Image (cartoon, rainbow, N blue to C red; front, side):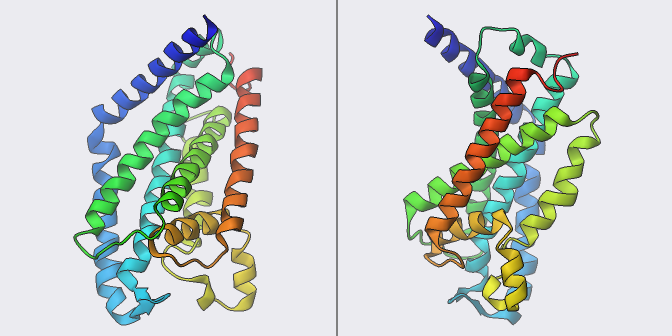
Length: 257
């Protein structure tokens, strides 16, 4: 009986989230497609001609994995933090907390919704990139698994942000001052082998570097870091954030009036 309730609850949350994404598709899908098109035109086409090859590939090909990953990260995070904080602000989340659904089902439902948006936008960016360059996937399993795990990581990070946010301005602080700088410094537009040794060591503390390079390895077969280390670091973040989210939901931290 409990499994049936859990499944119905999970499916209901996912349906609500997906419906929300599709209803405002002009805000969830179109802007990232336009933004990434500009990146491809400016960085890949105009600037890329002067840069030449990067990591043994045409510069346009080199930045495709980074731009896809950047769009997945920002949209997975953004979907979770806006949706969950909206439910918290409207006191809808309290209905879930007093329901018989366990915390992991609530978390799974919201994470799945963020995953759907992240993958939708990622797919759109890949389709846009095909107008500018040719892509041949070298390791499909690695490409898909890194993409899924990264989306899950930032979806759960978005939930943590939403739980502690007190007003709408608070949900923009982390993306603006933390997420965006880490993404741009995570090897999206360059190989860290071009950096001085000191800055290579500094970059090694940026978790997004491992996500971008893991995904790049899946598509192009090249990476600045070992794929095993990339999986290990992503896995650590999955465990830490999952534990944090479950604990916060179970305690009702910042959620119960």
